[in-house]
Amino acid sequence: MAFIQHTNCPNCGSRDNLAEYSDGFYCFGCGYKKQKNDINSVRSRLSESRASVMQSDEQDISTTNIIPQKAMQWLLKYGITQKDIDVYKLGWCESWQALILVNVPGYWQGRNFNNGAKYLSRGTKPLIFYGNGDILVCVEDVISAIKVSKADNVIAIPLLGSSMPLELTETILERFKTVRIWLDRDKAVEAVKMVRNLKQKGVDADVIITDKDPKEYNTKEINEWLKSR
Image (cartoon, one colour):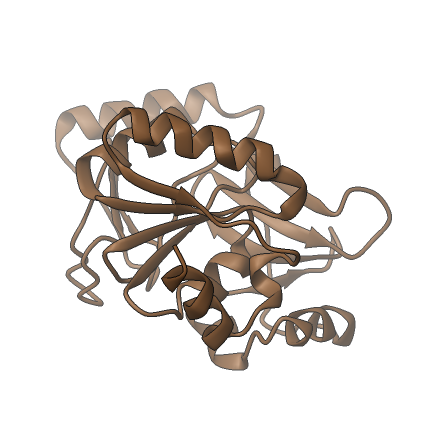
């Protein structure tokens, strides 16, 4: 399933949340999906399903909308509302004891509430855009993206880590004129390198470095940080 482009969603009207893949479409905003049924797409699905048999159990995950208290408290700490939970389809996976933040074809990521790593994930990281605006803000995690997307004229993308994939760089060059990189403070060096790379390609890019993670600020504070750049 190869990514082709982001485009308009016929279901929710989003300008760019609909991702077109080699075998179909998926909207990261409303969950709308549609398969392509031309002969090449069908052949592609058959070929990819055979190739991914060994990974399918890891990439598929079952969730419930009944989120336990420990996970709800974690969300509330960052000002995430029930509306946010519903809009972005956050769910709970009992078998992994994880709050699932992203669950799309071929990839899922969850905040682990068991022993071990803070985050769990399986599959190939997708490009997921939150909000609608002219300024692209790149952050590390999903909760930060949700919070930042509530600011004025902003569309946010979680890097799901601290590196910028080539696919995102290409998307930026095609679609965005203004980019802000706002990673957690311990990744300031990585953020500066990303900005330097984008500037060399002619993008109006700047870095935001704060004492706290983006998700720890409210909308007013986020707007102030963005306007300062």
